[in-house]
Image (cartoon, rainbow, N blue to C red; front, top):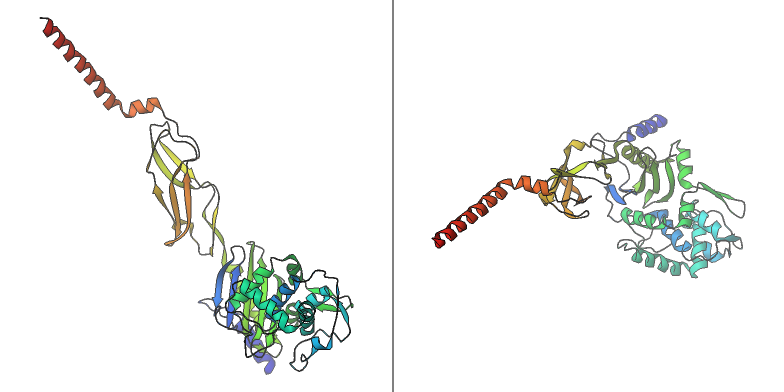
Length: 402
């Protein structure tokens, strides 16, 4: 009966709401990394415990302070003190064991080893407190106003171990700019110098639940009683060439079924299937056509020099794109190539997305023939006036002679 109940719960939870996305995580934020913009969020600015997602900051701060990844670190009793009592997950290092910084980095991030994280903290800053100061200084440097740390492991704390999913995502975005961090983040496993293999906790969790996350490139899990199940991950929509970054916290778990993995699958699948880039304007689309004066060309059409893509739902309808021109209404020759004529504002469903400068892309030459044709009435009137004036002057001259 219990097995049937779990199966039913899993099945129905995989179905997104007809009105939109429903997830079990209390906090979530999804970034489109192509544009570095938030495309989905749920309580993203609210305080939340982030458990071992803390190790994103731990790892990047360590990397920025390590001079030699092959340097050996000796595990001390101080590094391991209190971890067992706190029920912190450990990779299994022991006092006196010698490990490289590479070992500690991979064990910290992939295996989420608290002993590895402590090893980094004590060896690089002399103490856990000293390393936490480095972490908080980095948070301040990144402008993370709601992020504070009291330990590098991610253990719950009544004072100060808090963040938001949005700021955690921003930390990860920053960290992924570092090649060493990126290498670790996208690894599924790593063989330590001790020959022990550490594996991605995210991959292990998904495998234990028979969940396909092959499209997720890398991730970091976390769990404490307060934070519940947490996950930070990056996935690639290969069809539309869009990379996403997702952070979720406070997802429940039923026995060994991880709803945080399920939430990630639902969110990624929803956006893969329903969003992509659509061109508001295509290359060579006519932006504006302007009439000319005193030129051979009766009008000049200015075309787009490039595509102007918009990340939007697949309900996008290019027919509803509106181009509003502001600028010179008539081009009086001569005009040189490169002359700015005005701007075109590009909007979709009354929301403005782009402003494009309208630049003359070739010389507009003056045509004498067109000038004459255009002003023939004025010219003839002028000629007749001059002839009449000459005639009058001659008559006056003759009258004086008489």
